[in-house]
Image (cartoon, rainbow, N blue to C red; front, side):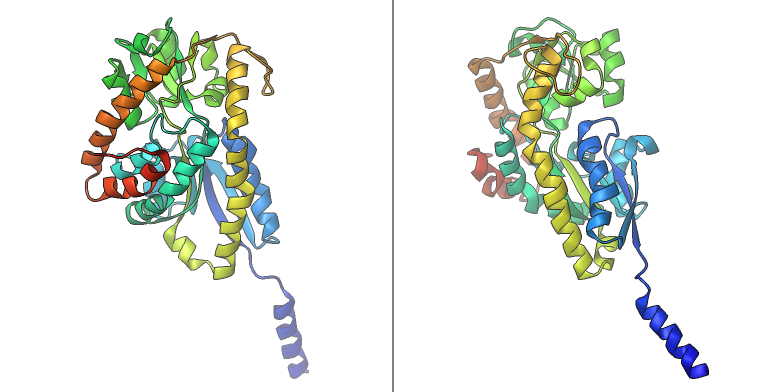
Length: 343
């Protein structure tokens, strides 16, 4: 009888499914399309299903947790949660070299932006490993960071003397070189700042501005990508990553590319066109009701002026702040793709 019970117990143990691995995941802004359309479905549904239930996910977002934007990746590195994703620019205070991922005005289409990101990815992987004890899983785009103004403008020169909320440090440097005053205001505080005159203009993605109601407190939209594409980096705590078996790591890497990163990039260019239509009423608005902001088309002269400032002032300033061999690495990777060299 004892032998029979032992055999039954062993057979039951072999037949029982392996205990599921639970990942605590912190997504980006819960109200914005990237999270709603891609992050939440991937982590809540797609990955658990692809793993046959071996992976389960507890998902929240950094704004729901009330996290400071600069704390998201350092806390990830400490193991407070397993996976986190947010805009890379939020981490540049701890890693100034990370600014080289999302440079303004170098990519005007989603394909160009992805080529930049792919070229920068080895650098980004090193930065997250060394600065944040993290493994990069994906880099996805917000739409290009464009200019919302509660002030009449007709072109880039009209930003001179205005107070403008930038979306990142490079953008702030670029705006200051154009004669604007860079103002540090968090995303959630921008509508009040525009309404109360704390800022005259603000830079964010067209879709983000539409979803957050910036059209209620601004009148003019200039779709020149002064803020780049605001790349969102998804990363896993490196200790957690190394603790997973090889098959699980391969599954996560494959699924996050094909079911999250690739679809987000594939929709980015169409999303930009649709978002501008939604904000200005110039075309159909798949997201809801069209608004009536004034569309300000940047001229070739505007673009040339901004690009000149970027290459002669902003990028060299970044290279000096980043130090080390980051400028050389950037020139040999991103610079080769976009045809720009930091002198």
